[in-house]
Amino acid sequence: MMKSFFTILLLVISMSCQKNISQQSDMTTTASGLQYKILKEGTGEGAKIGQDVKIHESTSYRDGTLIFSSENMEPIQFTLGGKIVIEGVDEGIRGMKKGEIRKLIVPTSLSKRSSYPPILSKDSILVYKIELIDIL
Image 1 (cartoon, rainbow, N blue to C red):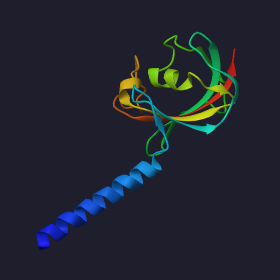
Image 2 (image 1 turned 180 degrees about the horizontal axis):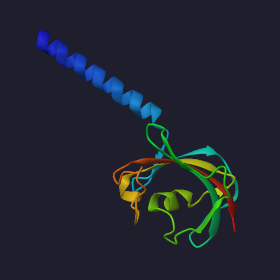
Image 3 (image 1 turned 120 degrees about the vertical axis):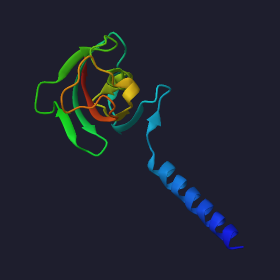
Image 4 (image 1 turned 90 degrees about the vertical axis):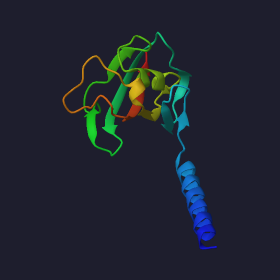
């Protein structure tokens, strides 16, 4: 009898935890595993592969530790699909509209780099805040 009680209690706790996790997850997940959330809507046409874009980005670990921010610099300019930035950022910017801000959670499979700064682990899941300044 006591064993059944504990089994039911564990099941109820487990279901409650899963419900809370799913309620907190308001991120959209793509087929590649990239997660994103639109923090501020933009206007106009969405960015497409082959277009040059200007962005501001902040990069951090999941615990909030800031790794890099371009917010006090000139915007970063690159061609979407040109393999200039990591795959996760490139994918996360596609479809963004001018003025839009997105939060991206980039899995390690989409954050491979040719070199790694000393503060960045090769196996890190990274969080980006991207603001699309302009589509050129």
